[in-house]
Image: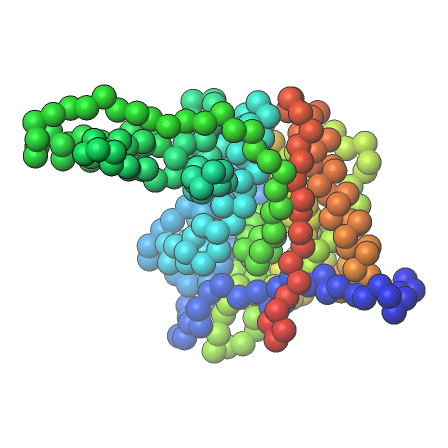
Length: 369
């Protein structure tokens, strides 16, 4: 690709050497799967004794969702509780906010997803008031983020955005003054404006974790496939790159807006693709090559509208590394195409209007790795 001086390049590696497990000393050797039956998913081959993420013996067991619960995922793998907790604290909670914003946008257009009920705190501000976006019982609405209290000629007026805000105030008034005033709950039918959603560092971290979770289901998987080879440390590592290429047939039968995880084991080790809402896509270099492991691939698909999850074994795509940088104009055009595809897919699945949102890729800070 030729790049002119007027069109600067943009790095496409949002996070290199992603690491979310602490350094661990005196590790138990990874559990070697014995008598593995080729062709079966790893969780169909008997119980796992060691955590797939850190390699340690699982003293405290936990269930980690392959597709996170906030995306509507239900299938889990066994891992240790410290790893599961660490993922939640370090990046999954923040990644969930990105999804909640999009879930709420869909709900305002009458496109209801099979995801947990959401509350987007301080979604917008109008006339000096801040409103939370709330999706409950199949309805999207805006409520005051916090109570508004005013006093006029000795008379107190208060507006509340939820029963949760109201109850402690009413309880206090009954106890102190023996009165139960008529509550005023403020709800506004404001239509959500077009907004910009920035894709921060949490999404590539989530992508590498999702690929690692699916990779742990490969036949003959052992936890050292996800780790550095250092004897002193064993950490979940990987390289994550924005990927604007098309890896799957154009006439794919998967439902529009589907989330997708693809992982393959080959000469380059473990590699994978994660695609959010059928558009936003990452390439993940998960782990180094390991000898005497069968070459294979798995595909996982989650339809957020119907809530259906599917897992398949399939021939390898033989992935190659995407470019590490592109012209700024090309990146802008590609992310705009993602947003357009998102809008078209939403209409295809039943959204009442065009879904207008601007997606912005994240450029790494200087010195970040």
